[in-house]
Image (cartoon, rainbow, N blue to C red; front, side, top):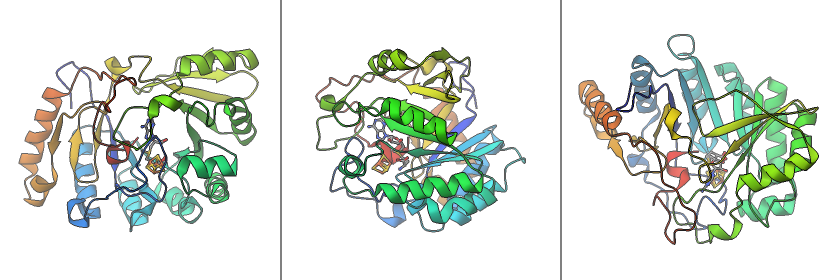
Length: 325
Ligand code: SAM
Ligand code: SF4
């Protein structure tokens, strides 16, 4: 799959549910309405779609959400997709909030998952509960331990939030170093209404990086994943630090990805509405129609996003939980 700017799409993020057991303030509203079940692809349809992508050259699939581990039957799904590793697919990964990880870590490993991202915005129980509006930190830390023990490599995702966790970057980095985890810091992105003013907690990572360089030596890494992160090796800690800066840095030139919502809507870009609807085409049994729609998506995939945190309205009306992070 090659788009009109010559970018080859080899990476797909698939949201397996829009539901979540947390309500992170920057991501969701307190009272979210979730989709009826019939609107969401069933597990067989997700696998069918993954097979179409793999046949068209996709090498990596990341399962996300909402919270992927609250989807009923997720272990079966992961096992079915894991069976594609080596048969066209190079890697299957997941982004999770970790609350259900204690029960799922072993099945994920057994299915072939070797790396996961776990979101953890604070290691203080009260702050964690405040940011997620309900989360239990211990449950997440137990999940992280279980994944670690099963042999899955862990990267922690932490959204940088002024006034909420901005004194925790250095401690989080040291903790990751002590546990053998990598760390990625993320800027808040203006996606969907969340009943909160995101600008209040927006913290540019340029500022975070400047602060971290007072305590650590950050050696720029040549690693690029085609994604929005820039990487640094943190001297002495053995941690690779990723900085995802969609608002302060344009990363779109090397974009290699598309995103599938739980409904089978496929988006060319996180920061645009450009999309094709595949669910009804899949249900109509039209592999040819699905292929044609994907062709349209690639032809129209935007050159880049134009996020601006200062806008009164979110740049894109849909929440991150629709297309997954
Ligand atoms: N529920 C899972 C989790 O939290 O890891 C997977 C889905 S979540 C939407 C994926 C990532 O997106 C998380 O790391 C989360 O912190 C991040 N995220 C959600 N909304 C965001 C926003 N508006 N700006 C920046 N990051 C966001
Ligand atoms: Fe749920 Fe992840 Fe969004 Fe938090 S960031 S509300 S855990 S989907």
